[in-house]
Amino acid sequence: MMKYKAMTNQVIRLKKEKPILVWAVTIVILALTAFAIASFFCFPFNNGQVHLGADTGFHINRIISLMEAQQNQVDYPYLFWNQNFNFGYPTPIFYCNLFLYWPASLLADGMLPVLVYKKYVFGLVWAATLMIGLCSYKVSRRSGYAAVLSMLLLILNTHSITDILRRGGLGELLALVFIPICLAGIYQTMYKDSRRWIWLAVGYCGLVLSHNISFILMCIVFAVFALINFKKLWHEKIRLLNILQAIAAALVCAWFFIAPMLEQMGAVDMVVSHTFNLGGGLAATAVDLSEIFNFTVDTTIYLNNSPGPFLIFMPLIGLAVRDKRKRNPFIFHCWIIGYVSMMMMTKLFPWQLFPFFSFMQFVQRLLPVCIPMLALAGGYYWYVFIRNFKQLEFRMLLKAISVIVILIPTYFMLKVNYDQISGYPDEMTVEEAKLSQYGDTQETAVYNVQQLSSADYLPYGADVDYKDYREWVKWAVSPSESMIDSSMKLLILDQEVDESEYGHFKFVVKSGPEGQWLTVPRTYYYGYQVDAIKDGEVIDTIIPYAAENTGLVQFDMLESESPITYDVVYRPTSVQTSSMALSTAAVQVALVIYGLERFLYYALKLWKGVHDSQPKSSPKAGSHRSAIRKD
Image (cartoon, rainbow, N blue to C red; front, side, top):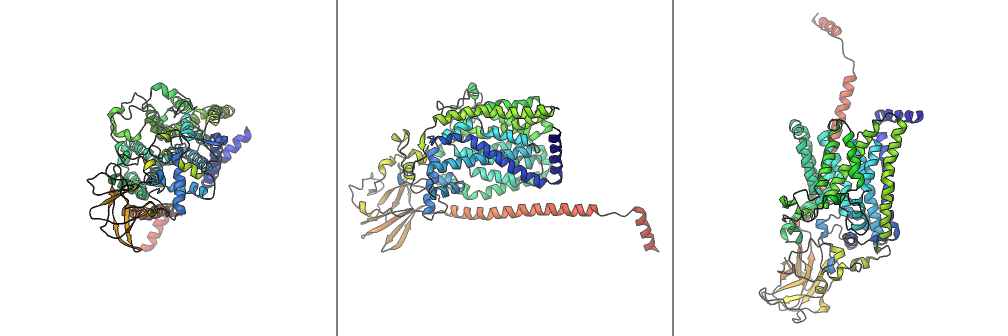
């Protein structure tokens, strides 16, 4: 034990003398620990399958569609052209592509889609675990034990097991990578040196690009922290200025994603637009209080409603910690907010009074916000509680027990999933994933369930059976008449429809009388254009609109007595292109501004240190020199 004490003293000395070296070593140790935890969590993947969850196929097909777009020289697609039986779907406008390029590159190199998905999940679990570890290390004032315990609590819980391994909730998992960075940014700007505002900007920018719902909820959490620290922010205007700077940087850097999403929601009436302000919507998904203590993780339940026994009970050790609020006010506030958000999932909370929150879809959306805060509180309070014991051996024993208590029960929870997971085999090909031949839900659905999941971004009220519409090209005499199948009005021939080029739907119309229009089998979204081509040249570009009742692309034909080739394409809008340019420039400007701020800070600190180290003249010597000058 004497060696252990000596080693501990050596570490303390290094922290003071060489903080950068200690930080580097700490990051390496936490990264290795996070890798071990991620390997432990993902071992059910070794059964040769991945579970057929509600969103598993959705995310696998996002990766496939991004790969296809890149192979066709579309670097950043706003529309997945081939999705939903080739009707097209705007997933990238609402789910950012930025974090999918790595798995898409693995898929392009020949790795099978399920294996790519598993590797991607493992990478995200690793990153999320590492981020909460670094955040905990920071807010706990450099406690390695608190960091490790927070890492275990974040991932090894009943909700994460069912949400990630079975439901396929990659959006929430990606959010867990950035929520700890958001919390670290809140801690830095409201409780510590606010000049390091970059963490707040990076956290919230990454979060909005990861999962919209979690971003909105974390904005509410930010507002709660701001209200708690209102007096401090009001009196210390520099904090408020740095926070506003971080908010502006996050907003502008993510504008390439936010602006097109808002534009599309304003231009097209989609299903997602009707999920707001639903009276009693969330109240119907609220759970009984007993469900919070239901720790079942087998396939008898779709999604566990509880953060799990460790996150519920281990942070309660904070009740035994004195002066919690003074000792670490940030952790104390996380502790309170974490438990309050957990209780808000129950029927005890009057959700019917808050219809706006129906955008969450179900109350379990609170858990990705609740879990990181309880993980931070649990790790820190156990660290403080154990530190109060004087005997070193007993402290080490308690630390070991607290880790083992989490690992052993979690192993059996994961083993259940290893035995019961079924759905997509590792051998599934890209074509099989696209055709959606796995699962019973597709038999009754009118759209491709595995590519669209809940189809939130289809036109609202569209009466279309996409499986049957695929070979149809509709034509009618005028908007007032009902649509007539092209088999009855053979102005368009099957052999004259050309879809060989990605992003193009071409067909030849024999003639075009005045006042006629066409509806083509593409789901309308803002950005579609129709090129009219004659003799190999574009003679006009027509702006289409959404067909009534179907939401398909519809446009007015040109009057012509000779054949015209129409090419239906989707081109980036002016908002999409300008916002991308703005965000690209903003990232560079934000980094330069922050770099200059830090450079000036350290330069001023260095100059002050050198100036203070210079010897000062004594009063007598100064008086003597003054006397000499007078003489």
